[in-house]
Length: 588
Image (tube, rainbow, N blue to C red; front, side, top):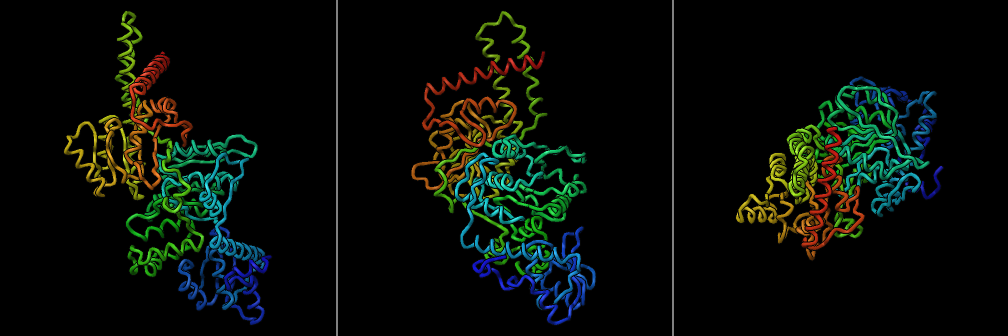
């Protein structure tokens, strides 16, 4: 029972939880029946055509093809609408559903109070250290509070503000396992790493994670968290709803902005079967505002009405996809507790001037193995040439090391491109650093729609100046730069720095970062180090002092000195020796 303060926060249509029944008793006149449909998870109104027709006019999401019938999705935001309707047109609640209706009304009242209190003073929740091994900033604690209040919602923070860690804190706090996480292919590895880093069971043991493989369904083994990428959804469309996962998280939920596909249909069925659904996206809509309807409809079915009524009322007419007043729609989504969005500028005082994040992405193992094949000849010479000099052997080892480094860069280049594409679609200005020309050729092909500028050893001085000018004047938001060609460049327009390949020298990375993070910079620059679990990345990561999702050591914030170059060469030599030993062991 709410106290007086809480009652003052309730909207009029929820002030009297028994209002509909009181009205029925006073008038002794009912206009139909109200019952719960467990299969569809909705409340069914059956009665006079006058009432059901009114339902369909006032609440488009309630429309059905059947005369004298209307449906209301059983979520907290709609129950209040239904109770308001019943104050005017009382309905007889079937005896077996009366207790469920009272519970639904109570939940709706509680939700309304929490929503209003959150609007006036946002909750800040620090997750339990027993199950969550991390520390949230103030705005991330507010994000956790928002997720805990809203069973179905969209966390739309700008990229780089920690949506993944907020979602994992939410999962740790609710303990609502098993959970299905759907993410783009290039982020699957990163989700695995972040799960094992941040979330544990109450007894401290790690969570079990199963990565769903292939389009053909198979019995899923027991696990706390299941990971699946969007391309597989269509194959599992009929199977996933039967698992009724308590929690579903759609990462980069803008992947579902287009309705009418098998992927969208499968996601809709999966979300409908879950108790809690969260969408994560820094860019929930792209060119057409009506895409937000498709995204929100996955999270909370018909909470914005049906598509036809949405475009008629929110857009420039029936079927039009351009939202007339996007600010008003955004305010509505926030007021309804459907969406929370913070930009980097809004939380800048909580962010360090330069943030470094290590992101684990996938790579093409087949491509990597194919590119490593020619190195077998060099490896054979190392094994069989007993009379080779130390200098000759060192050259062969370095040839193998350089070959593996290039193979690693090429194998992950398409996934790096996917990651950068998401940043650019979110409005970021990106400096993309790489080492090998073959890798940059893949970037040029994969990202050609963004008209990137290139500053590498292959461009003339005039071409480099032109690329610099295009980036700084906003003619392109992407500039691809060779790792060791960054000296002297001033590119402070950039908001993100992405390392698609790594160098052995920390100072080289620091110098590259400083192309964006210049004196007088007032923004918080985000530096992404994209690494894979195989190839040369792991040892280079260790040599640079990089740990998953954070730096535990300081990068050298000065140009590479002779001593730096000597040390990085030593690291490369050590890696070459270890690589040769590993390849020899595999061959044997």
